[in-house]
Amino acid sequence: MANVDQDDLMADAILSRKENPGVVSLMLNNRAIFWGSSLLFVFVMVAILAPLFTADPVSINPINRLKPPSAATLFGTDFLGRDIFARTLYGARISLVVGIAVAIIAISIGLVLGLVAGYVRVLDAVIMRTMDGLMSIPAILLAIALISLSGATLGTVIVAIVIPEVPRVVRLVRAVVLTVREEPYVEAAIAAGTKLPLILSRHILPNTIAPLIVQATYVCASAMLTESILGFLGAGIPPEIPSWGNIMSEGRTYFQISPWIIFFPGIALALTVLAVNIVGDGLRDTLDPRIARKM
Image (tube, rainbow, N blue to C red):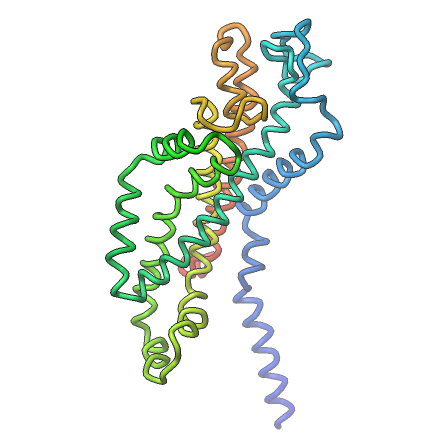
């Protein structure tokens, strides 16, 4: 009789696993995550392997200036005879590095400040009023001001984009903490005398992981767009380093006669941001328990 009961329990467990797939299974079955990740993977590999199948992106050849797309120059050339195909592929490196770096730094800083603001009531007002002040300044204007004060380098651009993104992460984490800290298990941990760092790391931090993963994708996409805007305005990466923003900025003067200078970097930027946003939407659908249950 005991053996029969054990067999029944094992069968029920297997059936429950099939009926309630885990997060990993849902992510693998999510078409948005699959297609977005596939497209993003292509851009990452293209950026890494660019030196293997492209010319020098800064090589000047006045004889070939403003050549239209052809078999020799797939994306045409610019006003200095530089290969737009090579410059577009190398520009992917800048956008991806900026996007990933800004996402990691902004999420890390925002997580710490959000945990403190949401749990330590004394510091909540100070931190949140500071975040409100940063959010009141347009992100582009703040980035331009910071870059103009310290000079246009890759590190400066990353820092200038990180600062406007941090308040959004702080507000998200704080909202989660304010909800979780009222849960019975957190109150039980406080009553048991558990130290604050342990409460934050064991009981509150795990609840912020899912929304932060989704937020990181949107921060990454926003950072890539902001970097391109700064480059287009001439306040971003120096012109000698190809990025999608400064490629389009240099081509706007010749847009009527050589539209390919702007068209191809613009398409690359749009597809990359689209891929990141699609992944973010898929992660949101997968990690949200209400949507996951429907799926």
